[in-house]
Image (cartoon, protein in one colour):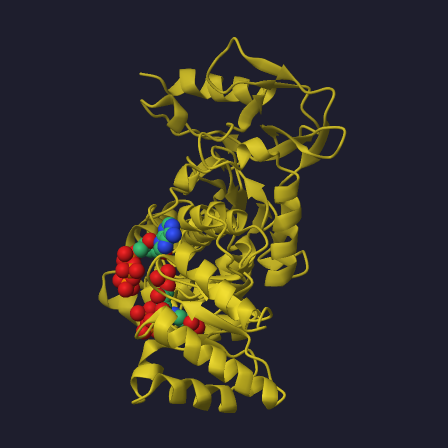
Amino acid sequence: MNITAAYTDYYQLTMAQVYFGTKPNGRAVFDYYFRSNPFNSGYSIFAGLEDVLNILETLEFTASDISYLKQHGFENDFLEYLKDFRFRGSIFSSKEGDVVFPNRPILQVEANIIEAQIVETLLLNMLNFQTLIATKASRIRRSAKDGILLDMGLRRAHATGGYYASRAAAIGGFDSTSNVKAAEDYNIPSSGTMAHSFIQSYEDELQAFRDFAKMRPVNCVLLIDTYNTLRSGLPNAITVAKEMESNGTQLMGVRLDSGDLAYLSKKTRKLLDDANLDYVKIVVSNQLDEYVIKSLKDQGAPIDIFGVGTNLVTGKPDAALDGVYKLSEYNGDPRIKLSENIIKVSLPSKKQVYRMLDSTGMFYGADAVALFNEAEVAQMEHPFDATKSLNLSSFKQEPLLEKVMEDGKRTTPSRSVSEIADYSKSRLAQLPDEYKRFQNPHIYKIGLSTALKQERDTLVQKHKF
Ligand SMILES: Nc1ncnc2c1ncn2[C@@H]1O[C@H](COP(=O)(O)OP(=O)(O)OP(=O)(O)O)[C@@H](O)[C@H]1O
Ligand SMILES: O=P(O)(O)OC[C@H]1O[C@H](OP(=O)(O)OP(=O)(O)O)[C@H](O)[C@@H]1O
Ligand SMILES: O=C(O)c1cccnc1
């Protein structure tokens, strides 16, 4: 996708023009974090970082962007600056694919304030969406256990968001995608079955199956619900599977796309097995999500492959992740944003986040946010309740934010989607099950170092009316 520096909100540019005229050399630190996990989940999966870094390395305003801005009141000296605009800042980030939690920095940008401000919208757009979808995918993966998951969502996605949704789905645990462009660009396995239109275009369902099996015998999956699943689709598929055997090929599967998927999959499995076709897999689709898949599993439905579209790529029922980007330091001084709602008061200064690991290497269930130069955190304070604190001396502390960009250039090697997906899986394995359950998951603790809490409280007093 061709993203230019104009992929931003108008107000970023009006602010940028004023910074340019008044304090062109200001240095800013911004924090990216979100306020609540989507889907009432006990965790989220951080995704979108590779795209952000790749785009930032080459981000520019095109001649056409400049000409548009010229027509919209931006002054010549500022436009001259924008012609040479590059992002030359540093980024400290959690690893893409990590298990992350609300109200702690996931990524920090340290840059000239004009640059940091202009890239805000791009960062939020990419990270909020991919984190939302990777989290949804991870929940679907949990329900499906070792079932194969196919992303079928592109047609129902919010336009080109479907491209990034397929990438995020793979990070969250999907095995393949129907989305050819995303598969090509991100090296994700692609796969697919057939549509009802293919069968409808024939007078006869059996002939449709025969032609398909003859010309596309590899990974052939026949859709069996166009007319009547048990009376027509399945018997015709069994006939073709037998014909394939005599030709030295094998039918890979049949797909159910309507009706009671538990009942139909059990009947289908029995009839396939009775015909000595125990290798033929059962694929199901039709408005699946983590709850329907869990219910099908609980009913003992013998389903091998789940095709998921709408509910995955739109992040249903949560339209967006509420990730924000807040200024925490300006020219080396801590900055805060106050709010009537104490949870929304931002955390000042450049920071590091430490994850507590127990002696077995599992996550204990607490991340401590500290000032950047604190090497470890001796005690974690509850952010709002002065009576609560936790002694951290018995834990191994893992710093979560690493430098991934300096002077606008990546400082760590790029990672493939499959590497990120493997990493995500290993991190989820370190998260105890209580945080992963769907109902009332355990709440992961986020605390502050004593020094950070003091700094925040001092600034709160300073700006209080
Ligand atoms: N045994 C089952 N247990 C739980 N949920 C199921 C079961 N079978 C199907 N579902 C889900 O119930 C919903 C059924 O939707 P709906 O009634 O619109 O399907 P349908 O009428 O069979 O299909 P269509 O309208 O496409 O012909 C879907 O989300 C489907 O995945
Ligand atoms: O239900 P979702 O989770 O969104 O999954 C994708 C759906 O998209 C397709 O239907 P569609 O009617 O678009 O095409 P078809 O004629 O190939 O069934 C497919 O058959 C699934 O039912
Ligand atoms: O391959 C499939 O079966 C498929 C792909 C996209 C949407 N619906 C189904």
